[in-house]
Image (cartoon, rainbow, N blue to C red; front, side, top):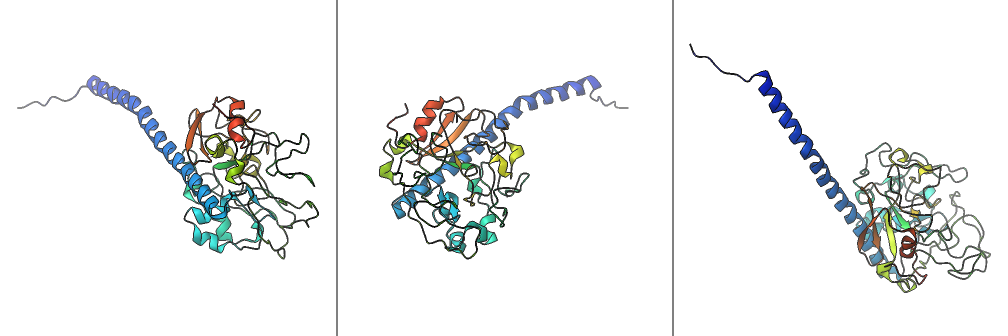
Length: 330
């Protein structure tokens, strides 16, 4: 008779333990490799934004506005023709406000608008759509696609996205100090329902109101600090629990009624948020921040994508955020 020798229980446990140790050693490396790939994809998304902005400027001789007047659209919708979404842009009604645009337009999710370290189009708690957001009179909230990037509207010196904030103010004039250092993404007046300089107020909630066009105002020559020294778009801070929630700054990116879902500031009091899950009070989401460990990515006006440490000095951030203050970041 032949006898067969099998593994003892001790030998089997030793093998299992060795396999467990190897898996424990390999898992962080695999996760790091995956995050590196996601971060590279996010960087590519920002690169596409940079190219689209410059193509827009080449066509219209000015950079896209933060928002289009009379509730018509945002810088996201303005970029459609320049990110291979010409068919979508063709369906956008040229005279109606966001609230009366085709459902297909406002709910279209574009993969490049989402950071893969955070979520992807059609995924997450909100399925990539806004659950709640700004409401305009009797129209109410229309759910739309959300996004993980925001334009830079300055250093927060004046927490608004337009220059001429009072009747008779000259471009770039602060209503208090008379000196307004602005960001790249600004909105031409009138943007809301308040009469400006004798212009009749826009009424985005009125289906009979007709948008009559707009002339972009921010030209490359107005970026006197240099295109390589000025932030254009970056990753916006948004905790996971805020997905699809307007109070967290995650409402429809095509809706121009609010600004915290499409714009951010950077500077003193507006540093990069280090903890991606940090929660603020409602509507206090005004800073940049990412879900990449320790860093946040930005595209500058010259089209270059740069990675900044979350601990970057706030004053330095402010120099990067303003296009015309004469302060060059080192």
